[in-house]
Amino acid sequence: MANRVFDTVGQVWAAGLCMGCGVCAVVCPTEAIRIELDPRRGVHSPGVDLHRCTGCGRCVDVCPGTDVQFDELEGAFHDGEHRGRRLGTFNECYVGYATDRSVRHDGASGGLATALLCQVLESRRIDGALVLGMSEGCPPRTRSILAEDASTIRKASGSKYCSAAIHEGLGQLLEREGRYAVVGLPCHLHAIRKLEMMDAEVKEKIALHVGLFCANNNSYNGTEYFLAGRRIRADRVRAIRYRDGGWPGKISVELTSGDVRSFPRATTETKWYRKALFTSAFHYDFAVRRCLLCPDQTAELADVSLGDPWLEEYKATDSIGHSVAIARNRVGQGALLAARDAGAIHLDPFPVAKARRAQNYRFKETVGSRLWLRRKVGFPFPTYGSRPLAVHWRAILSSLRYLPSYVSHHRWAWPLIRAIALAHYVQREFLRWLKVPIRAVLRGLRLRTVSSEGAE
Ligand SMILES: Cc1cc2nc3c(=O)[nH]c(=O)nc-3n(C[C@H](O)[C@H](O)[C@H](O)COP(=O)(O)OP(=O)(O)OC[C@H]3O[C@@H](n4cnc5c(N)ncnc54)[C@H](O)[C@@H]3O)c2cc1C
Image: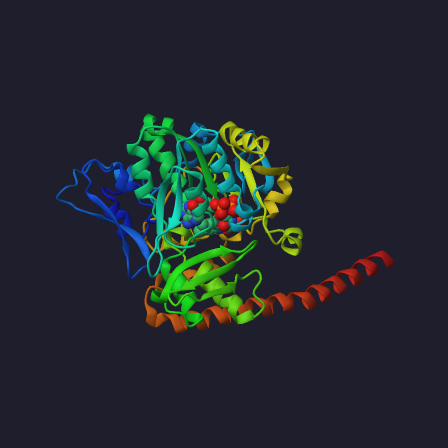
């Protein structure tokens, strides 16, 4: 494990490196840590009771915010044959979906996570699964659940693009006898793997790790800003599904009045300004700040990683959903193939070249530049072992686009954030248009040079 720079996770939070996963609270031997939702920032945060804290440092040791030693952790948990800069270590890539049509339809992409977890549970290889559901109440909030039956797993399907702490479900998992699966974001798995390195009993207990691809997560303020743009007050919302009704799905919102309203996601939105505001809410301006410093897009420490196939061929024809699945080790591959053989999922091989193209990796590939900038301004920064992270001046400049995420918890800043989002969108589209004639002129010039060289 890396050297400890912080004494408690309270300091990690103060340094802006906490992603609110909540795993620190589960390992504290004196129950000195409480995970609470910071209502202003819209993210989960650890509160440390210093009277109870003995300074043992276990909370910092499992914290994925301070460091993730990818080499060491991959060495301990993976036996994948291939290694790629974008995909991490893996054995095989697949594309597939749940054979149960309603699971597929309700899932974020192809319902593979839900179908896989249900099949592993029903075949009695696990006693339950740690999943993330939504609590009742206005506005609804995420709640980690230790699901011990298939219907609870199904109810928790779908992605939640808002703060997601897993301490409640994980705490129950650690207290009970039996073997379990966990599903989570890359950062959740970073913390769980770190915990498994510290505690062999936990390693034995968690039989399957399902990871979700993740460019970034968002604070609840992102959802509220999105809703405000549609003239909906968050406290009038009874339920929300971020990916509802097939693929890529819509955001559907059930109001306290009983009305249900649906809104397209950025990929299917036709109005440019709404597209710009969607990306502002869920990609740039309300990103959990720690996500700006994370290099892991494909949940590299999972046994199986799942994501969307963002390729034209799927975008043009698929309306129910497929999930890309990366089997990273024998455990992951065994689980996928057993679920396929049992008829719970359909699985096709997916060429690695396609898996590499199925995501936009630009955000993660520019993380080195954001880390560099953070170091230069003297802020604490996380470390990732010997992972090479490139620094590029253009990426340093474009990282300025994420500055609004530092002030987006102030509502007074929202009109300004909206204006920046619209201006950024127009500028990006304009440059995209401009590139076409510039490329044509350059191509013409090159042709003329080549033909005049030929004439000589
Ligand atoms: C914040 C976030 C960012 C993502 N970014 C990308 C991306 O950039 N590219 C991409 O291809 N895919 C991304 N995904 C993953 C994608 O949305 C799907 O989750 C994935 O394709 C699996 O879909 P599925 O239909 O197989 O899963 P489902 O059958 O719908 O099951 C999803 C499972 O994930 C759990 N879950 C949902 N949300 C969370 C959460 N926030 N934290 C922990 N567990 C959760 C649920 O409990 C459920 O068990 C992201 C997901 C999230 C939550």
